[in-house]
Amino acid sequence: MGARQKPRIRRGKRSPAPPAGRFAARTRQPQQPTALARPRPIEPDIQAAAERYGSHRVAVVIGTSTSGADENIPLFAHAAQGGAWAGQPFKQLQHTMGAPAEFAAHVYGLHGLRYTVSTACTSGARALISAARLLRANLADAVLCGGADTLSPLTINGFAALEVLSDGIANPFSARRNGINIGEAAAAFVMTRDADFGGGMQLLGYGASSDAHHMSSPRPDGLGAAQAFQAAPAPRRARGRKTSAG
Figure 1 (cartoon, helix red, strand yellow):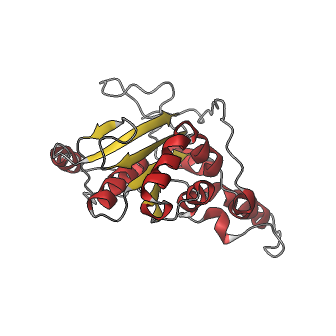
Figure 2 (tube, helix red, strand yellow):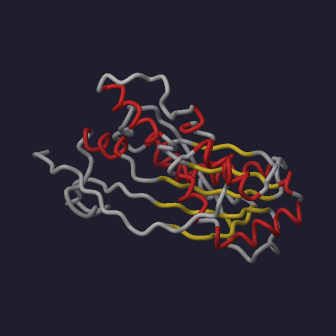
Figure 3 (cartoon, one colour):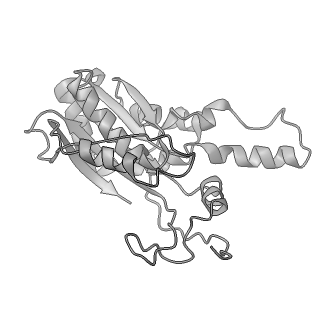
């Protein structure tokens, strides 16, 4: 592949997030402002779901890849320079993978099942799949679901080390493609079984697979992707209302 340039980072505007009190101070994860700014357009739907079904029947499933990993960087840099671990403003809660869902549930007063999905690049999509399955299993009547990830040096440098980042703008599905771009975004949905809730779109189906071929590469014959596509057309009776996507 030839020498690649050092990854360049361009940041867009960040949306303001609602206050979250002491929970935010305890966890302090970069995903939290991003994850909470995205559901704000559907806060009326979240409230309506809690009133209609009861807050204990509204679940939360959030997908993320890096979670709070960046909170480790200042501490590790301090330790690498010979600094002591003791006395540093660092807590385990700052980078626990489950914190995004717990945080969203706390802010919106939801008391149903809540957990975070982390399956790398598919985390957000898998959160929607998990939401649909919770509804099918009658473990919830509505699910606040979606995904959020922020730019992280850990992720960018990792993909750069794999030499899969493009030097310019990504050009997918082209014979001249030369890599991917890494960005940050968030999207959120309220998903229910009821067609009369919120006037949302219907989730027609989903599919997932794991070929376990290689740590960072799929099977050359594309079998894993093909199996996911083949599973997707089966209809699933769940409805979701889109809020926004960065």
